Length: 327
Image (cartoon, rainbow, N blue to C red; front, top):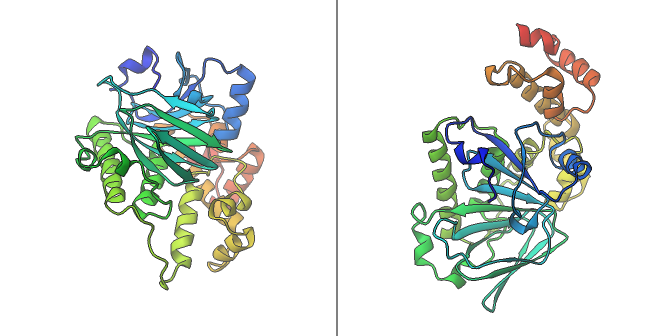
C-alpha cells in the first residue's frame, strides 16, 4: 500500500475512509472516477499516491488508520505481484473481484475467480493476475498470527476459488464494505483491533468450509431480500443506484427485485428513498458530522438535487434539514 508522509502518523486520527489516487491520473480523470465510484468528489484529506498502487489502479479506497482493507478501481491487466520477501509486507492476502473475472497464476498453478468469488494467496512466490472486464478488485492483508490455519495450509490448498455463495465470504463482503465506507465509528485502537479480529475470524469460517451452501427448500425470499437490502446499504451514496444495478448483482431481472419488495408492500425506489432519508437524519443529528454542510449531507446520501432532497426530507419527517440540525 502506498502511503504519504501524513499517512505515516495516523494512529491517533479519527477512523475514516481514505482515498488514494494514482499520481498519473489527470485532475479531470480524478473527478470523473470519484463521481462514478463514490457519487461525489472526496474532500481535501484524500491524497495522490507517491508510488504505483496495487494492480496499477487509478484509485484505491482504503481506511485511515490502515486496517488492511482496500478496493482497487480501474486495475490494469496483466499485473504481476513480485515475490514478497520483505517481512514488513503482508505475505498473505485475500483477493475478491467485484465484477468480471480474475485469473491467477503462480508456479504453474492456476485459479479462475468469477465476480464475487475469492481466494487466499501466499505471495511468497511471484503471482500473475489477468483481469477480464473487471472494474474493481478487493484485497485484505492477512496476519498469520490472527489466522493460524494459514500456516497449516499448503500454497495449492490456499490458491483455490471460494464460491461467492460461501456464507462466511458473504458476511465478510458486507462487513468489509461497511468498514471501508466508515459506517462503524472505530475511533480507538481497541475498536480497530476488534474489527481486524472480526475480519480474520470471518476468513477463518470461510476457510473451514470452502463450499457454497447447498440449495435447500427453506424459505429463500426473506434471506435474499435481506441480502439485497445489505447491498443497497453499501451503495446508498451512489446516485446511479438503480434496480437494474442490483438485479445485475444477483443475476435476476429487475422485475424479480421489484417483486421481492412488493411482498413488503413497497417498491425498490420507496425503500432506497427511505434509507437515504434515514441516513441523512442520522448525519444531521450526529455531533461527528456537525461540520458537514447540508448540501454535502444530501450528496453523501445519494441525492443529486438539493431542492429535491429538502422537499423529500420535509415530507418524510415534517421538518426541514436545517430545522433538524438546529433542533
